[in-house]
Each structure stands twice: as structure tokens, then as C-alpha cells.
Amino acid sequence: MAVVPETMRDDMTWQMGLVWEQVKSPVIIPALRLAVFLCLVMSVMLLVEKVYMAVVIVLFKLLGKRPDKRYKWEPIKDDVELGNSAYPMVLVQIPMYNEKEVYQLSIGAACGLSWPSDRIIIQVLDDSTDPVIKDLVEMECQKWASKGINIRYEIRDNRNGYKAGALKQGMKHSYVKQCDYVAIFDADFQPEPDFLWRTVPFLVHNPELALIQARWKFVNADECLMTRMQEMSLDYHFTVEQEVGSSTYAFFGFNGTAGVWRITALNEAGGWKDRTTVEDMDLAVRASLKGWKFLFLGDIKVKNELPSTLKAYRYQQHRWSCGPANLFRKMAVEIAKNKKVSLLKKVHVIYNFFFVRKIVAHIVTFVFYCVVIPATVLVPEVHIPKWGSVYIPSIITILNAVGTPRFNLLPTTQFPAVFCCFME
Image: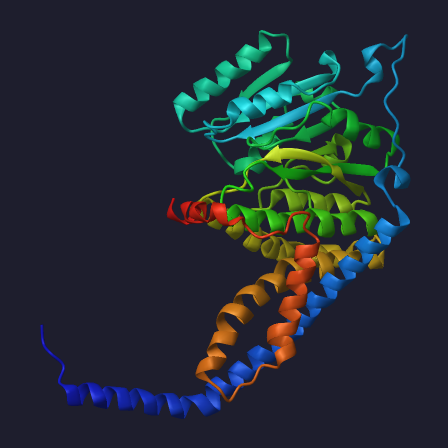
């Protein structure tokens, strides 16, 4: 291997420094100043959105605007003449894909839902590619069927459309035509037995409602630092973002699980589509454009698990980050031209829901904090005001933390577990 002479290395360093000085003034500094300006503007937009949501939450808490005060809710009453026919028919869908660790828990929780046995159908949509796991899931379904549970095990010849494709295929079966509502739970979700008793009456007594969304409860939040940070972020999403959307415009993004849909609304919106990686948000936006309303119930919590490995977390975040932007690109014009919803709701969906929360928030988090601010260290001629680099991020962080029920720091006894998430 040839050794580069010291003088040659000095010449290369000098030439690189010369090129840097020649490029910095006419190119780097103006570009970086423009990036700083745009990021500061987006930071202010994000701050205003956070403050707006905080004000709305405080006002609704003070005014006591609970869901049962905004919408009618009363238990479904027994009818001597009609018997169980007085209760609506509910379909429970559980999409699965190689869920060896959790399939028993999810199927068991769904089969344990309290509802008249002849008015509920459990539908397990198994897209597993591992034949051993498919056999295990099928045997689990047969076990519950032998106990008198109306459970159907459904498979496909392909995985076209992935989860959206499985849910769409599941809705095509003949027995689904008799159902009024569909509850959806991912394979790692475990609803409480009274879930349907607390959610379905809202749909029964309020024909304008299309979706009832419950909150998630994380059973492994204390596993390591990464799961605690995820809990903080997602708790803010539920307690603030979804609560604000539900309380003001009766719109928010469906989370893809732990929710109950009115099948009429689902079909009217065009059903499940696999054109993006956020099929749940896609369905919610299309249903909202048809004039349907959504209700978030923060008091109802469904247990599930957070990704505890860096690989699983990165996959989830990539889907949640890229999917909404792609959906916004496909639907922005359709939303703007829609005539069934008010102008204020259109502005809320386009600006607040999509642009600020799904696009600006990610750009500020990555580009500003991870690229632009470090770049100014190499280019001291570009100055970032303290309010943009310190005050705004601090206020946003405080608002996020206050919106989270448990925002205390990780106990020191758990710090050895912090590294397990990143090593796996």
C-alpha cells in the first residue's frame, strides 16, 4: 500500500480548505441562512399548534365537555319480544401475521368480550407465512369454537395489500352482511370484556358517528428508556391531539386498532385501500369527507405492547412518518374540493392535521435539530436566535410532557435495562 507523503497531504488539506472558503460565502452561507429562516418559520407554526391544542384541552376540561355530554349514551336495553335481536350484530376482526408470541392473548381477549353470543362474530384474518404458526392459530380458533364461540378463521392465497388487503377481504364474506359494526384489534391488543358495552351504545344512539376510538395502554412501558419515550409521545397523541380533534371538529386519524366502525360508513367511504402505508388514516379522511363524525374515548384503554427493539421501532416510525405525507399528496386536492364539510374543517384537516403535525413536525425534528443547528457550528457567520434554538424547543417539550400522565424520569434502578432495547 502506497504511503502518501506528508507534503502531499498538506497540499490536499490546503486545497480543500481553499475550495471550502471559495464555496462558503456564495453558496453555503446563503443556503444555510435560508434553511434557518424556513426552519424558524416552521418552528413557530409548530409552537402555535401546540399552544392551540393546550388551550383547547384546558377549556374542555374546565367546561366539563365529556363525550357522554356531547353525544347520547345509554345502555342498550333488553327487549322481551325481540330478545337478543335488540342488540346490534358486531364483527370483531383480528388481522395477524406470524404472531407466535401474542396470538393466544389476542384471540382469548376477543373471545372474552361480553356481548350476546349470537350477536357477535370473531374473525381471525391470518396472513402468516410460517405454516407452523398458521397451524397454531387455527387450532386456537378451533379451541374457542368448541366452547361455543362464533369464531371464523380466514386465510388468503396471497398477501396483497398487507393489513388493508386482509381487512378488505374479510369484509367480503357473506356472514359480514348481517353485521352493523366492526371492531378491529391488532394481534398484540387485548380489550377488556366490557369494551363493546362502553363503545357500541354511542354508535347506536348517534347515527352521525362513524368511529369510536379507544386509547392504548402500554403494558411494557417500563421495559427500557426507549419504551418510556414512546409512551410519552403516544400519550400526548391520545390525550391532546386526538382529544382536540374529537372535541372540535369530530375528526382525527384512526389508529388502525382499538376502534369500532359503523360498517355503513366504512363502505360509504370506499372501504379499505392499500395505496399508502397508513390505510387506517386513509379510511378516516375519506369517511370524514363524506360528513361522518368520530369520537375519541380516552377513558377506555386497550392493552398492547410498544416496540422494544430498535429495528421494530425504526420500521414503525418510518411507516408513521412517510405514510401521512404520501397520503396528503394524494388527497390534498380532493379535500380542498370537497363540498360536504365546512371550510373550517377543511383547514383543520389540511393545515393542522396533515401539514403541521405530519409534515412540519418531522422536518423540524430532523432537519432543524439534527442538520441545520449542527451545521451552524461549522459556519459561524450564520446565527440562530436564542428563541428559535432554545425557547421554542423548551416550550414544546414542556407542553408535550405536561400532556403526558406519567412524565417522570426513568428510575435509576432501570438504567441497566435502557441498553437492552438498542442492543437487540
